[in-house]
Length: 149
Length: 149
Image 1 (spheres, each protein chain N blue to C red):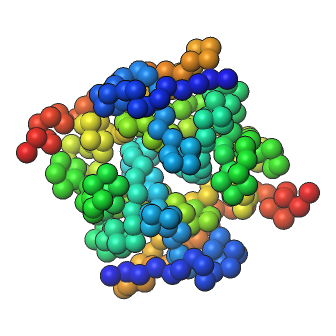
Image 2: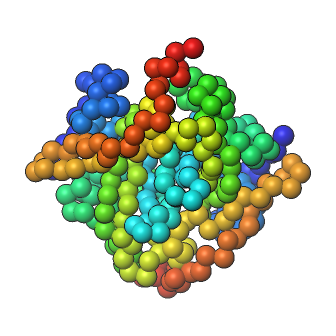
Image 3: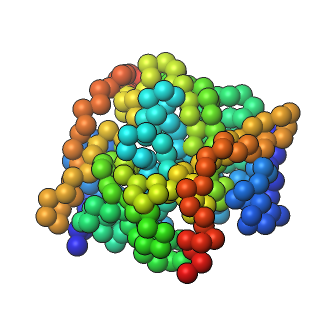
């Protein structure tokens, strides 16, 4: 199992400019991951990893998240078949966030609603009201069928 | 000031498929924002907004975040001149995250280190060790000069 350096042992400069990977997990032991599709560069989803699932992701090359709702390891696509093969993984300046570029397998749907991306609604404003407009992203699978088992 | 619907008043289906924008701010009153550059689609940064700065962003068309370290409104670029003009703002299926597409003004650097993006280091593994490799993203400004005032 891959282990990670403790960010508290690094100086500010080492954290931001160095070659030591010391992910800054939050109070719940989680780090935010932005998942981007290889090629299109569409943001597919935003989720979280803990040290264990970050290690599993790096070891297997397949995205493993931590499900906050189920409080369990979430191997993306285990139910739906929509797995994610990791192409590139980066951290940000202060190492509290990751951007992961993936090849989305299966029908190409990262979202549990069956759409390619979770970001299928645009925010629009009119006066002091904000509302959502569907961008028309099609469903690539029927969630009622896929998740009914 | 723009006000937002309370997500607790929505059904699961309304939250995920409806046209009511009801951002699910976390226990600290914050929502995660992924900021993407218009055109290149590069992920520039990941930050947070509270209801006030989300409203300011929507009203002005200029990115306003909430600084967790300073606990204050953070009008991006107020010190550095690197403001962000909002081109598109989307929410995800369960409305607890935003993707904001922007035109980065100034020298085009979203990161406080002077680089275009905060994601300038790639995670690499060798055996059970993960380390960071600089991707060579150049500095577009000198942070020592810009933030010394």
